[in-house]
Length: 314
Ligand SMILES: [Zn+2]
Image 1 (cartoon, rainbow, N blue to C red):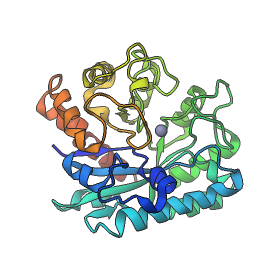
Image 2: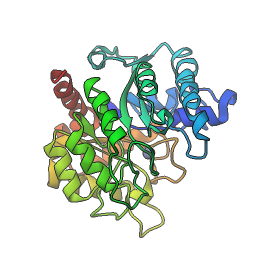
Image 3: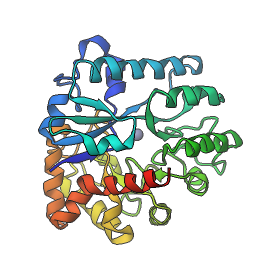
Image 4: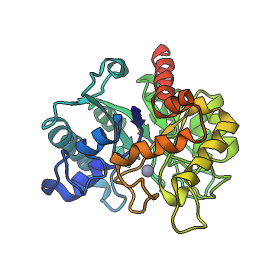
């Protein structure tokens, strides 16, 4: 079954390990072309993530470097990989093609410069998370326990994203930032988060957040990272993740859920879900709890419906 995955960090890994890795088949990449094909991943989002320890004045250049790696390592050697710069391309992918969507995970690199934001968006980025886990000039991230939320500059950033119909990712925001973004953002989505009522972690969404997000037209893509699934056992299973799907489906409706693996950004794994080639194992897990049509929805169709509505708002 075809799958859309809203989050991986292969570009970070390519930037760290550089020349030695091939996107075609390096085993060090959880997300490489061979594994995407084996896992039937039809559309893969590639996050640009700049590690917090990079000095501020080097961050913008690091973003440009990851965009360059996307072109030289992911696209150029692999004609089957298609850069999605317009959502209408999702409907015209051929059987052997894989759609590649660029996203930005944390916008620290723009500092307080909207010109830099526009320059990054011009590279074809379709989804932006405002923060990673820390605070920046825009908002506070998930690890920040404060009531600051979205700053004045952050409101200007959200306005730019709204004007350009960019999806705004709430997965790494603090709770106050989440509510501010939900109020001000046009296309708001969670690309890789689970249910806080089942696993109390700052990266997960409370039931109130999940409900409000979906009421605003948003979707929730669930993440495969064990610490966001269960914090009381050593080896987390696909069935443990299924409990998050079942809970959120009961809460907000299964038609608003999807997948966001976080491959290449994680170093511990669910059993039998250790790289993109194992993606059909999650499809099989979903089939134990949901109808064939509902599983198709989570895997692919829910996001396609979401994007249809986003595009209609353009
Ligand atoms: Zn993340």
